[in-house]
Image (cartoon, rainbow, N blue to C red; front, side, top):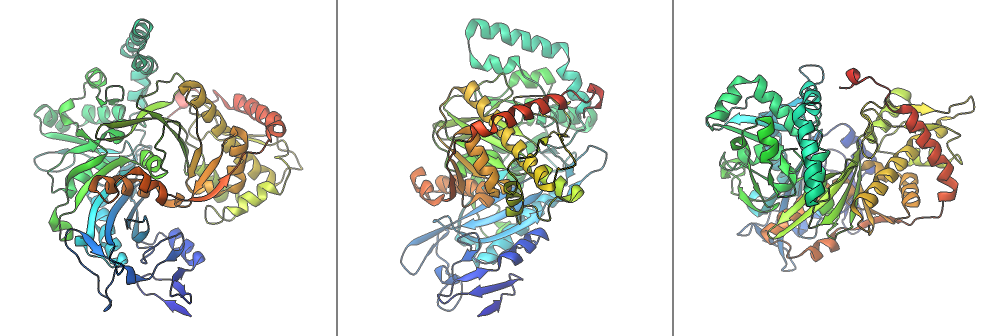
Length: 598
């Protein structure tokens, strides 16, 4: 029998067992229209929800127990973990139970501002208010009280930052997004400066005599507008009040996680974790602390930087005035590292592949950072007490954005991620790309090619070229870029890779997943929780810090597979296609003049 749940806002169906099944098409429409509260049932799978009886009493009221815990009818003590994932364009809030099931959710679109060309900002207070509202809506969706939450985990996009006055709490400027280009001139000047040349040459000299890996990284260090360093320097140089208050010890700096933590704890805790700090360009992963060398070279006062803490542990307690009770914050983690943890890539050699707007691959390198000549960035994966796990990361920034471009401006296919079988079926409808090759380079070509002057290129079209040929060429280009990154990881780290765990919207494409498995001769394990793997990782870390889960072995049982892609012997078929694609890459390189690159 069909029912309408007024709190959800779209049709649901109950089966004979009473399980409520959300209509998938309506759910997709809800996502597309950015509903603030897109699902209010306790979710256990992608579209299925368990009845409320697991955490409501016989009268239909929430069951409240002491110490943020709840007991279900079977006598098992429940614990609920609040997880917030703040991404580039959206904020997602989920409440998980101890079995890893989502009990309630809320989502908000982050309001971006573009005051000048190339500037990308977010208003700090608005973002905080959205977080608070999402938490309240998630509690309502789960039919829980805040007293039932055991702990909170926070996963955030990296390198979007703000500075503020420690006495007044007033920001000196809005959040400056990692996408922001206002520091382009600063970046160019510093990368060609004598100071940078001295650092490179001195590091090469020191590496020759000491053979220490950290000097390899310093010898090829290159500032980027994506990192915090240049944009923070721009702020210090152009906002006199910020520089003055910093000299007085009255200014604070923080990325998204630091600002939200400061506000959530009633302006008491100014901290971050090592995974977030390691992505800023101001952190030395080889000694696991803020880099005095970089800060002194750039004249960035280190007294404005937050304290670096363990990824999983007690950061502080949420101000009870916000939600009516004090909730421990027991995890802060960067988004890609959170996805790595959510995929349960706990062993050296485990690799996580995330394909969304861009393609990110993160390799667990164990207890030591890996220096790279090819542009792979050494980061801290997570730090839990005595355990510090490092990762090597590579990315190709143009993946999902290419599909969106093809949909919006070329009209190749009607759906984006809601109907990924459309692109998969189109690619499989032709035996090959018909001689068409595509090079995704809207933002240049990253490691291991490292050419910011490259141009997006499509080459080889003939009168016989069809949409299916072009779609196949697009998807093949993603697989080829991944193959380059994968082989670079093998060469640079010399670590045997065990398997690949995949998540993100683009990973829903079966044709692409199978081709990537074939080209790398590696098994690809696509996660069932791939849509929310970052949130799951933050929940895992928070739950470990609060004792909800006692070991990583418990977490491995929660993370589940949707499909395993086994490699097929197709290299002989694709070898010439790949080599031809590399020729197309050569044609796309060094297209723009240096003065054209933003």
